[in-house]
Length: 105
Ligand code: FES
View (spheres, rainbow, N blue to C red):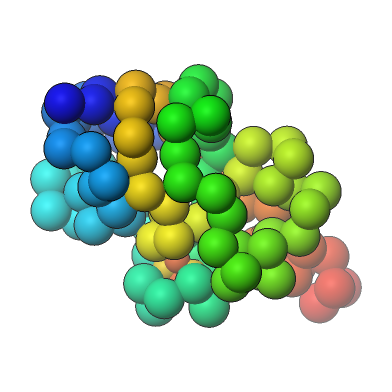
């Protein structure tokens, strides 16, 4: 079993290997925000505080949505990410929403 620490909501979960991060959040009230569930909207962006190395590699959708820069800073799309070890994440800030606001000005 792997431990997921949802720092923003304070939830702690034990999950099986290859568990989808967003699916576990929805099922056990981890409270990660989301809309599409399919790598399109960018609402489910999380920052990996600990355990980035135990996550599956970024999907093509994540690479397109986040870009290499945000991925290298530890951001992931929860709906596209599978967990294979202990991790800690937060979603205190969504850099994609920040970008949209900056463009709207
Ligand atoms: S919920 Fe829309 S990109 Fe993950």
